Each structure stands twice: as C-alpha cells, then as structure tokens.
Length: 292
Ligand SMILES: NC(=O)c1ccc[n+]([C@@H]2O[C@H](COP(=O)([O-])OP(=O)(O)OC[C@H]3O[C@@H](n4cnc5c(N)ncnc54)[C@H](OP(=O)(O)O)[C@@H]3O)[C@@H](O)[C@H]2O)c1
Image (tube, rainbow, N blue to C red; front, top):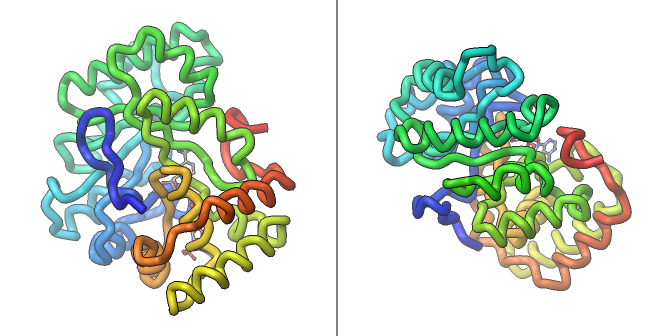
C-alpha cells in the first residue's frame, strides 16, 4: 500500500492523517496532537469549525517538529462567512490561530452554505480558494463533502482543479460514494476518507461484521501477528486509494495504523466481499447532504 499520495500540485500527502474534529471538537487538541506527532504522524487535519485551531497550533509548536516535515490541513467554515468578509480573511485568522505562515491544504468544508444561496456562490468560493492558493497561503486547495453534482458546479470554470475531496467513506456508504470516488480519480483529485471506522465504532453488529472477522483471521494468519477489525477496514480504504483521516486518544491505536503497511493487502475477492456485505446496510454517520 502507498504511504503517500501525490496531489495535483506535485506534493505528497501522507496516507494517514490525525484529525482534530469529532472526538476533539471544541476541545483542547494540543496534547493528543503532540502525542500523534511524537508517535510519528506527520499529517494533521483541522478545521475552522472544530473551534480548536489554536490548540492544534500549540500541539504542533510543542512537538518541536520542523514545519517542513508536517502536512497541515484546515477547512473553511462557510457557515460563518459574513457579508464583505473574504475566504482569504478567514484563512488569515486560521493561520494566526495555528501560528503558521501557510497550510499544506485548505478545503471548503461543506458546499451547502454556498449552494443554498446559488451555484454562482459556490463558483465564487472556488475562485476565492484559487486566490489563496496563488497567494501561497495554502500550498494546495480542495473540497470536502462534495458529491458529484457539487464538483460539477465548480469543475467547468476551475483554473485550479481541487487537489482533494475529503468525504465520509466506509463500506456502509460505498454504493453512494463510489460515483464520487470514480469522478475524483478521473480528475486526479485525491480522495481523503473520514469516519472510516464507522462500521465497528458507530454501527457495530451490522452485516459486515462476519466478513471482517473472516478476513481479519486470514490476515492474522498470513502476517503471523494479531490483526484488528479496524486494520481490515483501513486496508479496504487503502484498496480504494483513499487517504485515511482518523483520530484516537490512544498511542496503541496510532501504532495499529502505522503497522498497516506491514500487513498483507486485501485480495480483490476480499475487497469485493467487504463491498457486498457493506451493501446490505446503508448507514452514514455524518453529513446528510452527501448521502441519504
Ligand atoms: N470533513 C468532514 O466533514 C469531517 C467529518 C468528520 C470527521 N472529519 C475528520 O476526520 C477525523 C476522524 O473522524 P472520525 O472520528 O469519524 O474517524 P474514525 O476513524 O471513524 O473514528 C475514530 C474514533 O473511533 C474510536 N475508535 C477507534 N477504534 C475503536 C474501537 N476498536 N472501538 C471503539 N472505538 C474506537 C477512536 O477512539 P479512541 O480514542 O478510543 O481510539 C476515535 O474516537 C476527525 O477528527 C476530523 O478531522 C472530517
């Protein structure tokens, strides 16, 4: 499995990102960010909406890790854009909070505050994103929670193609996600997954469980060491060529992710089995805009 993906800017995004939303939403993330960086994670995923960018910045600073060795993402909270305020204004506030001169990736977190107004508003947002990219405040720009129709609004007039689309991705949303992933790959847009552990964390006891268990046992046997159901799910995300954005309070869990490249990959048959079992239940955990 690849340990980095190449963005359309030519730079590399590490396959594993540590997120400061969900469990850390509106909380001080500094300790866990520091823990993740100390454990060797070099990709951090933040957002204006998470209301903790200062603490992401503190964790980064306390780690002592050179800036150039880290990949930092933040995301536009379009819900709070005020009339007369630009996207650049909001990114400058984020950079100040983070204590950084630039982010490696800046994403539109959610297209709906724009599309509720008009398609033209979303087109204007993307133009503004191209502006912050040209200014060097973001080394790459992208989107999040964009379904096919959202991408189709911005792509025809885009001077810069989004570098990434961060979406909820796991087998219980795969049928609806597949067209988004296909379009992204056709356009050279890297897919970033979040909520990838949902089948075991948020929807346990579903139709996928027996399939995960069978594959987990096969991988443990071939690897000669224990393999977890979470690792099987993450292998599936990797088979879908997705960056994995996760979070954890536990160093052991970070290690589980980092061990993944050493574990054998899923066979094509196993990938198919996971998708077939996943198709028996449709269950999203996050933005209802993207999936029913
Ligand atoms: N763009 C967006 O709209 C969007 C939306 C949601 C999330 N995100 C990003 O993605 C990041 C990760 O999201 P996520 O939390 O949904 O990721 P996830 O990888 O699906 O879940 C991680 C959570 O699952 C728990 N966990 C892991 N293994 C477990 C197990 N075996 N049993 C019970 N709990 C387990 C972890 O807790 P422990 O502390 O116990 O390990 C952690 O809180 C966020 O922080 C954010 O940066 C983005």
